[in-house]
Amino acid sequence: MSRIVVVTGGTRGIGAAIAARFQAAGDQVHAPGRADCDVTDEDAVARYFDDLGPVDVLVNNAGISASAPLAKTSLEQWRTQLEVNATGAFLCTRAVLPGMRSRDTGRIVTVASTASHIGYRYTAGYTASKHAAVGLMRATAAELAGTGVTANAVCPAFVRTDMTAASVARIQERTGRDEADAEAALAAASPLGRLLEPDEVAHAVIFFAAPEAAAINGQTLVLDGGGIQT
Image: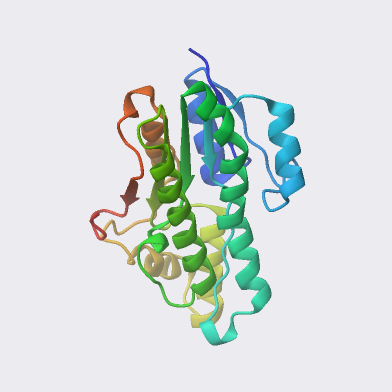
C-alpha cells in the first residue's frame, strides 16, 4: 500500500537517497528543500503540512554543520545549527504527530549522527544539536509507547555528501593535506575506515519506517562499523 512520505532536506545527499528508496517502493514522496519549506520557520512548517494533509512517514533529515574550536564558535553558528538540526525536527514532528496519533499509525525517523552519542572536537554546535535531536526522538517515543506510531533515529558516521566534502575542504585548508589524506582523516574517526554512502543511511531509514518495525521505538541505530555500541 502506497504511503505519504516526507523527507526534509530531500533534494540532495542523504535526503535524495532516502527519497529514492521510498519512491522505488511505490510510496508517494515529498522531499522539500529549504526553498519549499524552511524547517526553522514555525508558520512555514505549519502551512506546508496543512497543505499536504495526512503523513504516514516523516524523515527529519534537514541538517547543517559548521566546524570551529569552541572558543571561536560564534553565537550565530551555535544558534543556526540548533535551529535547523533540532528545532526543525521538533516543528516537523509536532506537525505530523496529531494526525498519526488519530490514525494510530505512523513512522518518524530522525537522521542524526554519531555526534549524537559522543563529542568530537571543533563541533560544539553540531554535536549539541544532534544530541538534542536524539533527545527529542526519545521523548517523542516515550509519549508514543503502546501506540501504532514509532520514533527512532539513524546515527551515521561521516557520509559521502556535500556537507562532508566541505569538512574535507576545511581540513585541507587548515592542514595542507591533499584531498585523499583529508578524507582519510575523517574516515579514521570510525572503525569502518571509510565514508558511508548515502544509500547505506537510506537503507537504515527504510528499516525503521517499515510496517514490520512496529515494535521498535525510541531506538538509535549507529552506522560506524562498531565503534559506538548501544
